[in-house]
Amino acid sequence: MLISSSLFAKSVEKYRSAKKARESYGWDDARRDINLLFETTLLILASILLVFEFLLFVYAIFLAINCTSGGPERVVHIVLAVFFTIPYVLVSVFMSQCAKESLGGSGFFPDSLVSHLKPQPEKAQFGMCSAAPNFRFY
Image 1: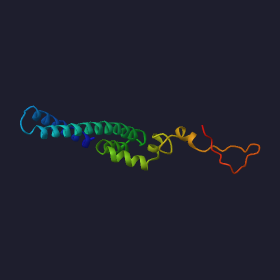
Image 2 (image 1 turned 90 degrees about the horizontal axis):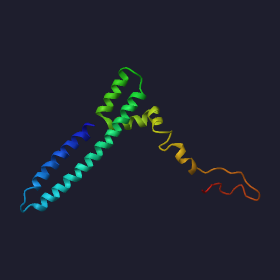
Image 3 (image 1 turned 180 degrees about the horizontal axis):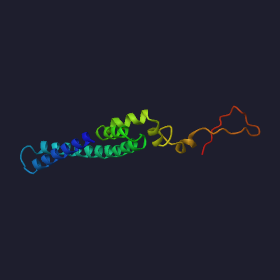
Image 4 (image 1 turned 60 degrees about the vertical axis):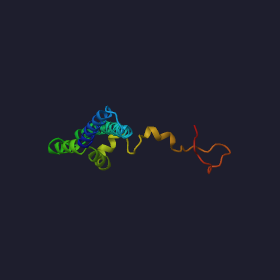
């Protein structure tokens, strides 16, 4: 959260200064317009990163509360989640079984989403070869 919030604050400050410089007209209008466009793009990207990291922050606090026992362990995990949000979530998801289960299954997608994609074995009917492919198409 510290990185994205400081990046957002710097982007807002640079955007305001570029917008203020835009108000004066002269020979360098094209350069100022390109600078304002660049600062606007950085502001939009910083806003998206801030929202994404805030969602990860909420998920990290959820992991720290639900996947640890009370006491000093939970306090350390909450401090790590606050200051190092993205690395904490990545390490937790790859190392902790509780974090993997909180994502919705053993894999990346829940089983209910991919169950219809797996081949379904069918019994051989009259006159069908058992070596025929047994995929169902919907």
